[in-house]
Amino acid sequence: MALRLEQKKAIVAEVSSVAAQAHSAVAAEYSGLTVPEMTELRKKARESQVYLRVVKNTLARRALDGTDYACMSEGLVGPLLLVFSLDEPGSAARVVKDFSKEHEHLKPKLVAIGGKLYGPEELERLASLPTKEQAISMLMALMKAPVEKLVRTMAEPHAKLVRTVAAVRDQKQAA
Image 1: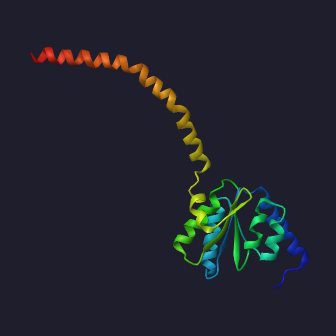
Image 2 (image 1 turned 90 degrees about the vertical axis):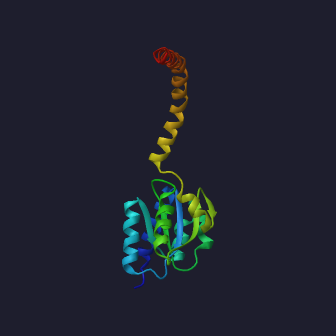
Image 3 (image 1 turned 30 degrees about the vertical axis):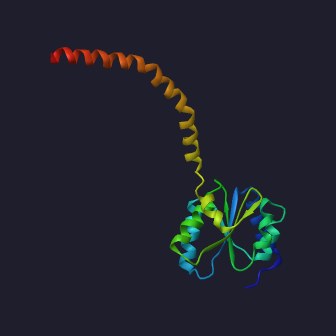
């Protein structure tokens, strides 16, 4: 069924607004996936707070024009689905990577982040970015490390004295 002009404008506006606020984008070829597999992919995308949409390439080019992802326009060839990360930069890449492990018909074609276009080989690196919670915990551990080291250093003379006294006691008891 052909889309009317109003429907096309609505799709372009929706994708454009999502692209304007997205952290990263992945375009993947989906030909060969069955309907239940696509439903499963959409479900995983919803759970991961990722926007996934199958859009005609001409409409996708218009939607991406004027956003950070305009660099993807030339690579939009063939049946592609667009996946945008809304919360974390790596979430779209994680969804595509995890799903493509189980289903060989889903093939990543383009990866874009920060207005720069990368090939599908960069999907792994983008997917390995830490989540927000992981990044916060890494930062807190980094901030906490100097204080912990200072406390251990300050406590070491007392601990050494206690070990020395215990060794002298053990030596006298043994004699």
